[in-house]
Amino acid sequence: MSTPLRLGIAGLGTVGIGVVKIVQTHAALLARRAGRPVEIVAVSANSRSKNRGADISAYGWEDDPVQLARREDVDVVVELIGGENGVAKALVETALKSGKDVVTANKALLAKHGTALARLAEEKGRSLRFEAAVAGGIPVIKALTEGLAGNQIKRVMGVMNGTCNYILTRMESAGLPYDAVFEEARKLGYLEADPNLDVGGIDAGHKLSLLSAIAFGTEVDFDNVVLQGIGSVSTADIRLARDMGYSIKLLGVAQMTGRGLEQRMTPCLVPETHPLGQLQGGTNMVVIEGDMVGQIVLRGAGAGEGPTASAVMGDVIDIARGFRLPVFGQPAADLVAAPPAAVSAGAPWYLRMTLLDKPGALAKIATVLGESGISIARMRQYSHEGTDAPVLIVTHKASSDDIAHALTRFADTGVLVGEPVALRIEEV
Ligand SMILES: NC(=O)C1=CN([C@@H]2O[C@H](COP(=O)(O)OP(=O)(O)OC[C@H]3O[C@@H](n4cnc5c(N)ncnc54)[C@H](OP(=O)(O)O)[C@@H]3O)[C@@H](O)[C@H]2O)C=CC1
Ligand SMILES: N[C@@H](CCO)C(=O)O
Image (spheres, rainbow, N blue to C red):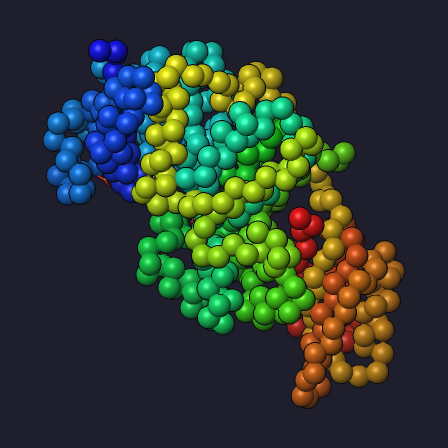
């Protein structure tokens, strides 16, 4: 009988219990695929007595999860507690320093400390695997580090927060305002303990920063991800964007440009006919563009017990097979600190505004756009009653700076009612 791979699991919540269930229900299949048995020897969580819907009585118990890293009988520490610092960080560091391999789903930890932890893992000759940290069940880390390793990656895009996609698509299908759907999402248990991690774009930004590091061979740089949440997206914009042939998504985009590394997680319009535009509910989608392969679209469950545990087990099996690769697909010592792109690449923009319905109002707006170097591609003024006219403009490609400049100057025209809305249209 070959030597079992022995796991110590820290965290028995949604993902941790999912991993326990896979190890228990698929024991024979895992042993066949890994070439050796995969066993759990010890676990840790806050409460030992909590009923978790799985029998953990056969496993050792540690009140302090960091002790898992010190146990002689643990080969791999599976960190499923979460959090960018605190016990999760202490556990991962201790495990690597103690010569254990680590599998984690913790995108917050890696977004903050990924480069340093990768260096530590590689110095110690250990694996640090994190498939579950990005887009849950979608094997996107494997796709980038292995299947697409022969490509120069041009761009990585995606919808990487299921909660935000649920909120945006539900606002569209039910015509409900953001606040009402946010409450629905809260009742359904979709939101993180700190909802701003979801709706503020932070969770998805963490994920994007990890994909960027692999795609472009750069240090993990979450601090330079441009973040804008979905709280300001209105049902009116969702409806009007659809009228122009687009869907609004919280879209992550990472690309290396002549001006530096561009990373943004912001509400964007995408064509409703593209798979990104058609993505409904809590599903995730990652789109990767390589110079040789063209565009690859990966779609699937980005969260939940089964899908996330599935990704964790993919990493565990690789370790059991003795398959090792650098944490971010190339040696951590070679990752470069890329300067952040100060201005994002040019794109068409969706501009929605309300104008006073009087002669010359639209001309003033058109003049400001022209003087800001922005060309109009399409324009629509909706029929209305009263003195306020709703106007939609789709521009040709413009830089974010030019758009910001035009928005400032709109205020001086004296014809604008309220604040205009400007959303980037991502060319996909
Ligand atoms: N849920 C999901 O769908 C996804 C989660 N992830 C990531 O996976 C990780 C785990 O998430 P999830 O399972 O949802 O989290 P949960 O909140 O469901 O579970 C967290 C677990 O950690 C335990 N825990 C918390 N603090 C400590 C501590 N100080 N010492 C020991 N145990 C502790 C908790 O114990 P107790 O149960 O006793 O309270 C609980 O079992 C996170 O990094 C998350 O971002 C990634 C992708 C998807
Ligand atoms: N809160 C995340 C799940 C964990 O990554 C989401 O809604 O996609």
